[in-house]
Length: 191
Image (tube, rainbow, N blue to C red; front, side):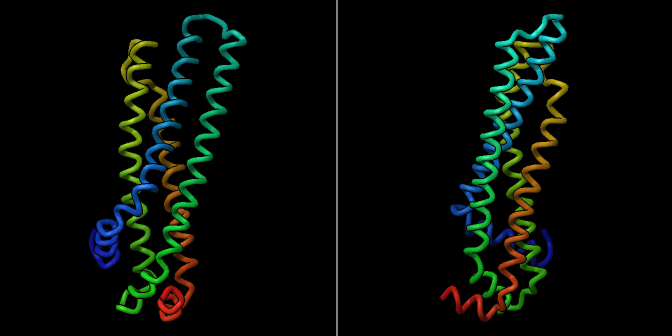
């Protein structure tokens, strides 16, 4: 984390840890719940298919219900994440103005927000993956002879991509909008 953007990002993450906890929890929940549930449903479907049995109507309904609930939870957590990131980044307009008045360029401030987003995403994905594995591994051991299912990497990559897109997209788009305000105006408006 070299350069002005990296230095500012690390400093801000340390100073704002309590404000960022809610965003981190949203990332962890999204990664854990969606990855675990979709993977376990895929393991269950493959186990039923491998046994040569035909899924009953109840089993198909349960699968649909599982995927619907996961979809609702994922959308809710994504909306919560976007709202939290938007509010947190918009709230920082005075901070961004002060940094620019102290000599940081708009590109460096935007780079700082990007580095913060990457660090948040990596941390959230890491802990979300650990939580997902806590559910997936025991389920897979019981339903199959494997420890980690073949479906896990693909599902995990999809959820990581969504997490990164939502986190970085919201943070950078909001920061870019906030940076349109002149630095003196941003400091005066927030005061």
